[in-house]
Image 1: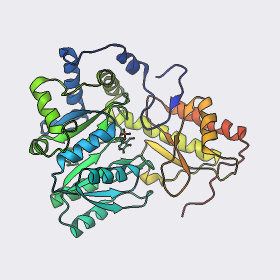
Image 2: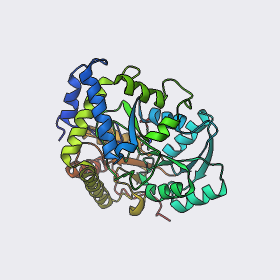
Image 3: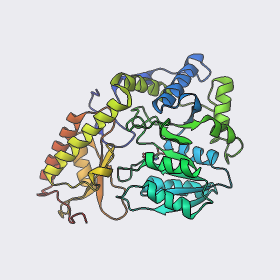
Image 4: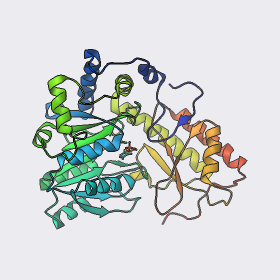
Length: 377
Ligand SMILES: Cc1ncc(COP(=O)(O)O)c(C=O)c1O
């Protein structure tokens, strides 16, 4: 898959990409070039197809990291007098709350423990209690802990109550199944450098055509105006402003590999095997995952830090990196943790190898046991 001397990124994007994807960036494209614009159009078609969007949905690409696309979606699809319910069980949910506040969209923050999923029942109760809520903004996989929220159940609740649903599917799209034919939603947002295994630099919003059309004039920002981006692209085939050409070319190559692998079911299965191999190997070393298996998404795993006084994340990180693997710090507020990603152009051999690298690192650091201080409640 990937070969070379670069360390393997076990992070949730940027992630390790294949050689073919990297090679696709060796050509410079002009933004007016018909060949380049045909690539953009083909990517948009394929992304709608991955979500099973048919004719009802369109894809609007947006320059920037994933947050730019999330902000563009909220700013366009929630009218200025709207009110957004955010089931909040982690850092990326909290970011949506902040976005709403920046954009002056009223927000109802529904706090949930970081190791518990957002459920249809909790969202239903919050909607019943506050009829002024117009939209729910849900993070599908909360990458902060690595937890999967109940998108399918919450989508049915939103439909039953006539509320809009905007889904941050940044770290789940293309790996976990999302079929907008059976899971009704207004829009989902993801990016080039996540489970599609492209490089970072471009987000996209897959949005119901009628919802996008009705959103003209809502945006607070020219650069973030999704409706304008879409309308201009329809008229001209071009991006409104300088496109991330190399990122787009790499994403085309990455999607071709995604299709050749067998699409979402195959990608999801590979990540699930990576995740299971990782958790099993780490348990043998004494590490404990933060989440219960039922809510763990096969994307990134949070492990409790060892309680041994010889453990210190920076030193641990540096030594594992020297062995060829890049880990990720924890993002939980209450307990000390670190994270290991399962996504990217890697397979379960890499997971076995990183466990071996962690084992050797613990021995180097004189850490006898990786067990954390506290047992789960
Ligand atoms: C759930 C989720 N939302 C949003 C983002 C967007 O973050 P960024 O702007 O850093 O790409 C990420 C990135 O990992 C994510 O996991």
